[in-house]
Length: 121
Image (tube, rainbow, N blue to C red; front, top):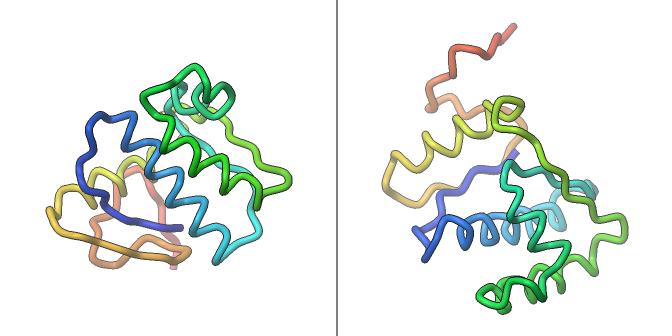
């Protein structure tokens, strides 16, 4: 539903945490959804055992604060093969090399459609 290209962070895992924080903030504003999915198993481990990731203390404290707003918070692993559309949108948004914000329920018309998506209009 949302697209935003983030500035490059210290590590890919820092980017994963930042994107989860942003997604949680968006959900609070625009949806009642309590479930999140990621293809990053380390991110799930961080959420489940934040004390085991001391380099991410500040970022994980923000996530923990946001989790208070989600009484039924759930994060699950979704393989990249099951998440091709989101992965495609993320790679395409990064290729623009400028800030992009989008909130909506469909693929933006200015993005090329990945070949595996069948659109019936």
